Image (cartoon, rainbow, N blue to C red; front, side, top):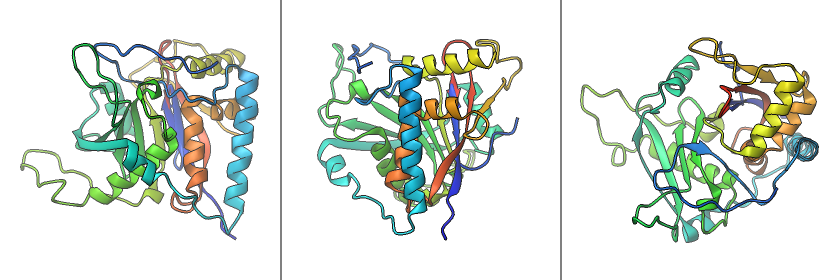
Length: 300
């Protein structure tokens, strides 16, 4: 019998945990701003506008994943690599999160926040602003060695192709990051005074999916409902440098847990684990951790 491993999701509104817990309406098209902020909107066609709808959808997603994990003969579905090659491009560079709070959060979770890979994914016919500047719809930071996806900025409205969901784009680019991390031709040796680039790791090593600066209105509405129902203060979580993290699980808070699984910012993680259960190590979401400063929450 194959037992599913666990996955901890951590979000900064929301945080999804795939392994270890932390220590301490319809899509609308928006104009592309001249200086786009970081954030995770992730509006898909299959949206849930309210708590009841999100909870129903999230519970259905959860049952689908459980059935997949329980089936020892389940195989990964055919991935979207052919569509990716036809409609998308990806590139990467070294990075360290600019937000000092996120930088410290990563260190607190054992993720060395220097010299990580930022992967930029864009459709081949993506729009540009009036000034001719290019904006990529998907920018995410990967640490395949320690098993972390850090969703930095994801705006599906900017994806002119919309041929693949976020979960499939993550599966493909996370594989790229895993395969390329140890390639010295792609990751040339660094100067002695620079921090070392972490080695690569298998994609089944994924433990954390982190969404920093969640801006999706629907996700924030579900979180507000959860916070107010539990009498958690919204906007008063940051009582010290690390802030206050709230934990949500199927056992302890099933209604809110499944409602969050149904939101745009979280459901993609469920489908990533479901559609590629074998390669992702047969994991399930066991905990969602959230922190809310009153404006844009974090999800881990």
